[in-house]
Image 1 (cartoon, protein in one colour):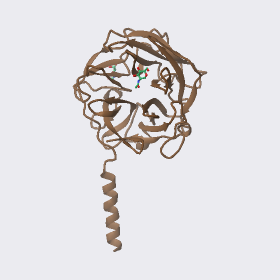
Image 2: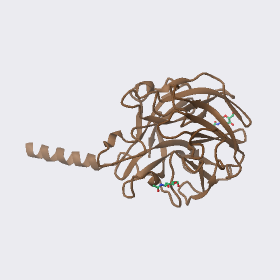
Image 3: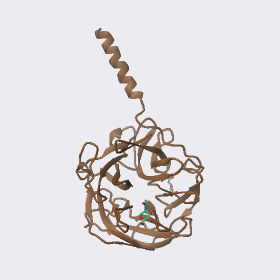
Image 4: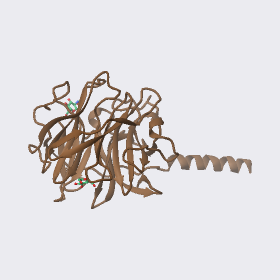
Length: 326
Ligand SMILES: *[C@@H]1O[C@H](CO)[C@@H](O)[C@H](O)[C@H]1NC(C)=O
Ligand SMILES: *[C@@H]1O[C@H](CO)[C@@H](O)[C@H](O)[C@H]1NC(C)=O
């Protein structure tokens, strides 16, 4: 009986360790390089995917699974925001409102708080159609936050919009913005909506998704961008977590009731098998697939260099009011 029990527990342990907790990333063919992707489907069915680097590179496809083709950049030459990094640009967020696409982008260099969130507008999203409008949020070495990694979401009323941003330092902040044609400007004071108190506050990439009367705050937590899978603790590399609130301005709490301002965040997707360090996420509703979580990740069979970073996506299944990937 003892022996049987021991065998059973070995068997159960090994079963548990091989059972996949998350599905594999959805298929991607063609040019799948991405980092901090933003995905928008245009009314004619064409998909646009935007990425960090290359002045916000643009890729297009007729299906989310590809084949994806590189098709220019949002900004030509350099951003009009005159700080270091304005010829690179990071972390796009693209939203459609009242007939106009707004592409929010980040200007910075690694480990610097001299940063800005700028934006450009277009009615088509095609390369060459974007008009650069300059900065909405900026930061310096005396700011509590780093003004990168932005996202804009609708509130409850017609003209109620929020921008969230932040990376490391005191993590994620939010402020009201007003949007009028090609103009976007801050219309309220900022407040902190998420904070990871431990370590050096490895939390960034906030993205808020409104579903019915609930706002979901998705975050990228953990070590980003430079990896050694042999020594990095697997539970400490980039992964995607979520908190929710019945108000766009929070407070946001995770499934266990832990506040996102106190290190909370329920894991939605993390490293598993050959899928490594997923993050830089966003959500959109695709008439072909439903609600989709998209992100970048590394494939351990390919490599963990920055340029190995690849587009991943999974359909969201909502379980008891929480997003899960399926
Ligand atoms: C957000 O609000 C704008 C302006 O009212 C509207 O055009 C847009 O469709 C809304 N977006 C979503 C996702 O509801
Ligand atoms: C990675 O890609 C970027 C952008 O295409 C390029 O500038 C850079 O040289 C590449 N780095 C490596 C190590 O290949």
